Image 1 (cartoon, one colour):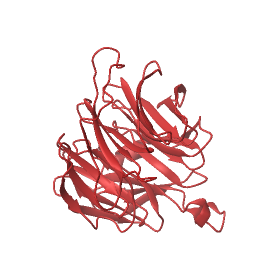
Image 2 (tube, one colour; image 1 turned 60 degrees about the vertical axis):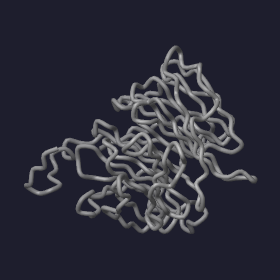
Image 3 (cartoon, helix red, strand yellow; image 1 turned 120 degrees about the vertical axis):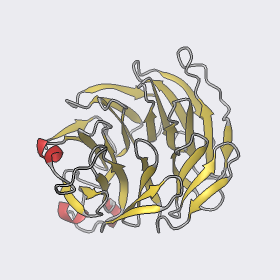
Amino acid sequence: MRPILLQGHERSLTQIKFNREGDLLFSCSKDSLINVWYTDNGERLGTYDGHNGAVWTIDVDSQSRFLISGSADNTMRLWSVATGKCLFFWEFPTAVKRVAFSEDDDQVVCITEQRMGHQGAVRIFNINRDGDGTQQSKEPVSMFNPIGSKAVVCAFAHRPDLILTGHESGKVALFDAKSGEEVMSNEHAHRDVVTDLQLSPDRTYFITSSKDKSARLHETRTLMVLKTYVTETPLNSAAIAPLKPYVLLGGGQDAMSVTTTSLRQGKFETRFWHKVLEEEVGRVKGHFGPVNTIAVSPKGDCYASGGEDGFVRVHHFDESYFRAKPYGDLEIED
């Protein structure tokens, strides 16, 4: 499984995302750039230039038509994937830490940071898909401030009227998208900040990673913890592999907490765990610093990781990955 090394960022990666077909990979970084790459050969297709601060988060719609991004420059921007043009931007009092499209691409949810007297807020915007995309409304259709621990990650849940959030305290919650009421929560999903949240393709379950050194699989409807994967290092990202029963976890101590420089010590690997049996099945080394973000192609043929070292590594799975029998001789029907 030889990696393709993508060099297009000067600072650490914050999030990477595949499009629905898995042929394009989007990456954003603290260097204020967003790049798009061809997955199969690692060639850079283009750059989305316009933010004036670290870009914390990106998402791409299911048609690969619009890209949405959130940045430390207190703006959320809508881009044309094909032309790289910024079509619209929304301004906020604080930084945008997370953005996500709804399943039907008609809405975007974003989280803005709690800072300087401003409460952390979750806002939902309608996206007007008619015309060229420049005619958007500045006003959110709904906005609410989660009480208590601040929300750090979010996504649309299994129903479009529910927003799934992960919090600084380790809790995960479901909020009513219109009223902003907390419908359900699991206060003790994690013991430390939730660093990533990724849903299964049908949104019935999701995975979270945390600084508490564990990742967990939850049922979306009830927020019940289904599986737990405990590692020995703080985790920054977790992803669910389609087609195979694996989850991928990435993390590592940050530079400030590392006393030695040995690669082994830093634990900068992507870890593969058996989703059902909760056992680690393999590791892939490579980054010279913590793994900040992981994504698996929706086709299930490759995965990518973005590191503190400024590199994105794309790994196409070998034949042996597809031949492996993760349940022994038991054949599982999808």
